[in-house]
Every structure is written in C-alpha cells, then in structure tokens.
Length: 500
Image 1 (cartoon, one colour):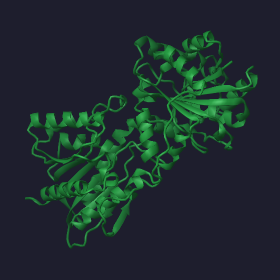
Image 2 (cartoon, helix red, strand yellow; image 1 turned 90 degrees about the vertical axis):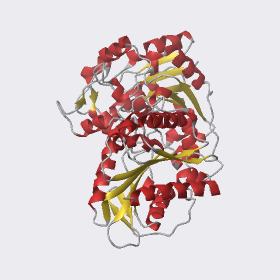
Image 3 (cartoon, one colour; image 1 turned 180 degrees about the horizontal axis):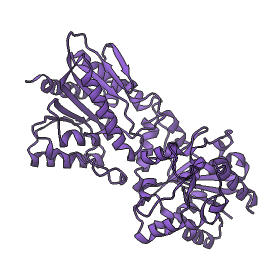
Image 4 (cartoon, helix red, strand yellow; image 1 turned 30 degrees about the vertical axis):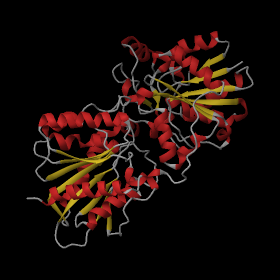
C-alpha cells in the first residue's frame, strides 16, 4: 500500500488537499495531509518561536505515526523545506520525495531564497505589524507566490478563506541537513504555467550550473502538469494520478550530459587578449588602449539565473569575450551582474541596468553621449524601457537571440516588459538583432512578433542571421558562420556609436 504525506505551500494546510486526498484514498492509498503548526485550524498554536524546525518536527511526527513502513513525502512550494528536513531525519522510512512545483533547497538554504517576488523578500527582511508573522495573501495577491493559472475565482476565494499568517522564521531559518536525504529517490512535478518545463530542466542539466547534474540521476523522474502553482485545486484528479505514478517510480528520465563542461563555461568563439578590467559593484569595465573618453557598449546577460550561481555571468567566457572584443575595437566594454533571479524580478533587474548605465556614463573614461545597450536571451525583455523612450545618448540597441515577449509559461512576468509593444516608441533608434536559425520555437515566435511590430512602427531593425546557430551559438557553435555573425553585429553597433 502506498502512503503519502502531503505538505503544502506557505499559508495553507491540509484542507487544500481535500480533493486529491479523496482520490488517493479511493485508490487504496494511505494519506496524511499535513497542517503544520500555525496553519489552518492550528493557527492559534504558533508563536514567535515557531520556525522551520517546528514544521520539520510536525512532519517527523506524521512519519512516526504512519502505519505504512515506507512513505512518499510530497512537498509543495515552501513545503519541500520541512519535507526535506524530516526525510533527512527519517530517511529509512521514506521511499520517495516528490517536489511539487518546488525549488531545490540545499543544506543551509532558507525558503526566502526561493521566493520570486522581490517585494515579498523585502517584506520578510523588514518586518511590519506583530513582527513574527507574514500576513496571508488577499484573493488578488496569490500570484505573488506562484502562478494562479487554472484557478477560478471560487478557488481563489477558497484558498484565501483557508489561509493563515505564516510565521516568518519558517521562511528565514536555514534548512539543516545531515546528508542522509540524498539517498532517497525523488520525483519532480512541474506546473508549466509557473515558467518551468521538462525541456528547460534538460537544458539546465546540459548547459547550466553543475548542481543541476544530480537531476540526471536515474532515480529521479519528472512529470508536467499544464497548470499553475495550485494543481490540488486546479486539476486534483490529474495531480492524484501523477502522485500515484511518481510513487510507482515512473516519470521522464533526463540523460546525463556527454559534455562535462557546462555551456556557460565553454570558451568564446574569438580568441582575444585581456584588457584592463575594473570592477565597480555589479559592473565591470573592459578598458581599451585609448586616450580620452570613449563610447561604451553595455552587455546585458539573460536569465533568470540562480542568485548563488558561481561564477556569475560577467566572469563567464562569453561575456568576458564580448567585453574584450569591444575593448579591442577601441570602446569600453561593460558587463553587469543584474539581479534577474526569478520571473518576478524583471523590475529589479531593470533598475540594476539603469543604475549601471548611469554609472558608466558618469565615468570620465566614457563618452556619455555615445552608449549602446546590448541584450541577450531572457534579458531581451529588459530592452522594453530603452525602446519605449530612448534617450538621445543611446546610439544603438542590440539584441542577440533575445526573448522579446513573455513566453507562454511566464505568466508571472510583469506585463509591462513587452518589447514588441514598446518598439513603437523607438523612433529613429537603430536596432541590431542577431537571430539564431536553430532557435527554440517559443522564443522565435517572440522575435517574429517584434520584427512585425517594428516594421509597422517604421523602426529600422538590422537583422544578423546565423542560419545554423543555436541559442548561445558563441560558445556552442565555433564555426565561420558564427564568427562572421558576431563580427558583423559588433561592426554594425560600433558604426552607430561612431556616427554623427
């Protein structure tokens, strides 16, 4: 007999699992929907000392009380933290851990690090009110905690009615793990409207940070649900079936990458000498061998990227290469580590870019009236403000394999970040767009929509095509075609910087 312990997202408790619980029980499973201390009808049991360890103890107690010798622990969102903590203490009782639309916290991580909404993170670090609880969301605020795709107004009302204030220390106390939990098989259930998919996970395993390689373990299976962050409300039958399949060890397996070096650490396609590099906060300046103020090109990396990623993009061969290439051409190459760590962080990242550009323009080694801004990949959405009202000193805007509209699964991105709508305000601003012929179809659709909107607005877009190039061709495809494309794009951008 399969036995489940279900642990839900912040503010919620056992009642949100009602429909799923009924279906699992009907299948013959043993089910324990958890209501942690301070949640639901236990809200009066919490106090200033209620923290993550309190919630871990709650789950440990459920494990100890369960009749089944082995259990499947399901952690939804925040719930994965107490699940992992409890499984680490009772690893011999846990047959599988299911990550339900949840992050991958490690030893020492606090749940606050996985909260995408910057305003929520700020609120947690600057307590208001009673100081030890975070107020539960109103019906129109749940999207700050994850996509509400698939929820009817009645579902949101139910979610709000069941919610309780979350003790802050449950979100800020680091997770303590001994390492025992690493031996437990896992499954991931991805809610695609939250911005993730199995295809994205496969890309992260192949090209992303080394910590994602563990997802290629044959004991790890993946499932997708085409819904938002609350599948127990939006599609309970499908979720129940998926949980049963996960418990049986089913799911999509991800192949281990053949290439040991992550994509972002592979060499740039041009072999360039180093130039003096000066670091000022989040900004690096690659300085040319020249007297007097020089034009500058600000390179804006893509994302979202984990906040703890090492190294950060300005130290990747790709952006070191672009910065050095600009310096070799007699202009200041600028790279910026902006804080696009989640899909809700575009506003924060846009502020980082604006501040970086002002810092660069104020530098006496830079001609502040001759600046270009060059966007890459998911950073393409950050071009919105520069297209809608370009300042006179912005001589060119460039974009390489950019995302130019929120992708279908990116429902929590602020809708104001829409380059295709903003391009109508670009006026005479030159735009240089480098397009990869082997682009992801979802991204290619956004590029085509942008080009159509630009044509209708009369904005001149110079397109550099790389017919046989992939997304990230500068490190993936070291071909003559790729080299010519990078050289052509740089030559075109510099031509606009130097024109009168």
